[in-house]
Every structure is written in structure tokens, then in C-alpha cells.
Length: 121
Image 1 (cartoon, rainbow, N blue to C red):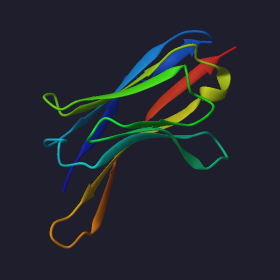
Image 2 (cartoon, rainbow, N blue to C red):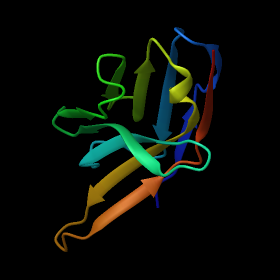
Image 3 (spheres, helix red, strand yellow):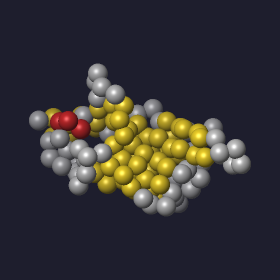
Image 4 (cartoon, rainbow, N blue to C red):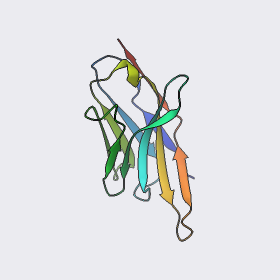
């Protein structure tokens, strides 16, 4: 079992910045993909950004050019740098980690409890 703990959320004004952190209870090098998901009230939980073990990144169209995802394997931590925040970025942000078991090939998914981000106009 793996525990993921998010931090760094808060209340900011539009145009401001935040950096979210997700720390895992074990080394993250075994995770094939890690990502950040966002869930706004009354909406689905959608992918914001992801990064593979090889460093390949993917972003939702709404955050491209404003958010940057990164990982520090030595600290077992995933980051999301959020700049030029907009009210539409408001929601609970969840950390996700995906691993592929060997030799079964079974997919494992782990989730954090989430951290609230609120952007005021």
C-alpha cells in the first residue's frame, strides 16, 4: 500500500500562483505515471497534468502554458506549479500515482485525499 499526501493549496486572487506538493510514503521511481486531477463542485474529476517516469508530460488544454508538473525522485514528491491562476481553476486537487505490477502487468492506482484551491476574482 502507498500513501499520498497533498499540500500547498489555499486561497489566492486571480493572477496569483501556488505550488502543490504530493509526497509518497515510498520511492516514486516505480510509478509509471503520476498526475494531478481537479474536481470542481458539481463537476467530474478531470486530469490536469501528468508526468511519466521518463519525464514526458501532458496537460489539459485549459492549463497549458500556466501550469508545470514535475517530480523529484530523491524526495518522493510530485509538484504542480500553478501560475496566472483563474477562478475556473478552483477545486479540490488530487494526487494520483499509477504502477504496473510485475510480472502480472496489473495496474495499480493510488490517490491522495486532496487539497483545496480557491481562486477569487
